[in-house]
Length: 362
Image (cartoon, rainbow, N blue to C red; front, side):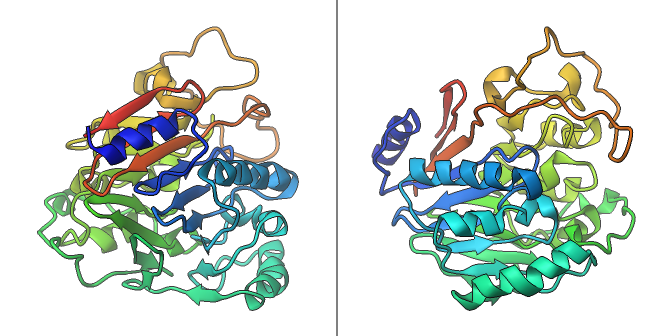
C-alpha cells in the first residue's frame, strides 16, 4: 500500500495530526445545503459554500468549524461561493465571525433578485471582502492554492472554451441530450471547479443545471475522466445530465443531499449507471429514493433523530415546498461528514464518520 494512502487511512480513523502528503476533502452535513472543505497537503484550505442561513446559520457554521478542527486548520484561505442561494451562502457571516477568511471568490452580482440576498451582498459581504480580498472568477481562471491545481470550468453561466490538458475528445452522450427549461436563475450561474492533486481529480459544479452542463460538455468533453464527483445540485434531476455524469466516468460520487432534497429516481438512475462508477456515497438517506434507488447504509453518513423501522421500497413523491407541506424528518443531533483522503498517485480512501467505515480506491 502506498505510504500516503496508508497514512490517510490512519488519519481517517480519527487521528489528530494532519497528513502532509494527502489532499483531504470533507463533505460537511448542512442538511441539504452545500459545504465542502478542501485542505491541501501544505495545509491550505479552500471552502466551497457555507450552508444555510437564518436559524440554521449558527448550526451550519459550527459544523464547518468542527471539520476545520479535525483537519487541523484555523482559517479559510479561499472561500468559493458557487451562487447566491441561501443554502449555499447562508452561514457565511456567521462563519466569518468565528474564523478568519482571507479571500472571497464568487461569480459576480446576484442575477435572481431577492431583497435579503441583495442587501447581504451590498452590505455584509462587501464589508467582509473589502477587509480581505475578493476574486470574481471567469471560466479558465486558476485559483491559487499551494500543492493543488484549481481551475474554474464555469461561472456566471459561461463555460470554458478550451479543454484541460489531455481532454477534448468528442462526447458521445451529447447526441441524446434533451434540453431542460431555460434556467435564468442563480443555479446556472454556479462557479464550477476541478481540483487536481497529482493524478487525483475531483469535480465540483455547484448547482449547475442541465442546459449549462450541456454547454460545458458538448460537443467535446473538456474535462476528461475524474476520480471524485461531488454530485451536482444535491442529486436533483434538474442537474446531473448524462452528458456530464457518464462522460467523466467517476470512480466515486458523493451526494450532499437531504432527507427530502435530492436523490430522485431520475437522477439516481443516471448516477448508478455511470461507466466506471464503483460507489455512490450520500450525506443523508433520501426518502425520495426509497430502497429502490438508495445505497447500502454503510455509505450513508446521516440518518434522522427518530429512525423509522423500515424504509419504503418505493420512492415517495417529492412533496415540494411551501405552506401545507409537512417538514422532513428532524436531524438536529450530531452531524457526520464524509471524508476523502487522496494521494498524489491517484489512490484515495473515503470514510463515513458516522460508522467509521473506510473504503480504499487504489
